[in-house]
Amino acid sequence: MNEILQANIFFVIASIATVCFCVLVSIILYHLIKIMQTIRAILSRVEEGSEVIAEDLTHLRSAIMEGGIVSRLIGLFFGGVSPTKPRRKSKITSSSKKTYGNEKTSEEDWSI
Image (cartoon, rainbow, N blue to C red; front, side):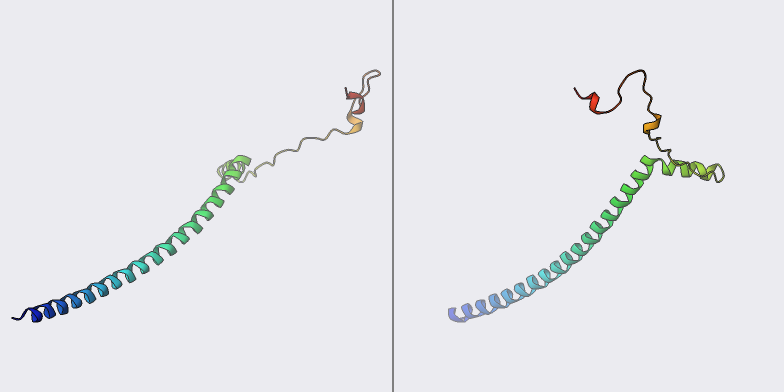
């Protein structure tokens, strides 16, 4: 065979192989892009779910700190006993203040 004919056959085979390789790489990249979009959608759903769970845990923590859950559970076990509300501290009125002797109770006299 002639050397030029051998070179032409080589270039034809090399160009076909290059085209096939480029098509395969394009198909693989297309599928990778689709997979990445799916992963992005899944991660956004997970982030939304984690925010909801964090809010729920915040509400649960505040309810536990206030004693609401414990008192409700006790109420369920002991037959409809409603949970008691925390009592307010009584306010001190001016009539309930007592003075002894000639002591002054105004705030102006307490200044140094």
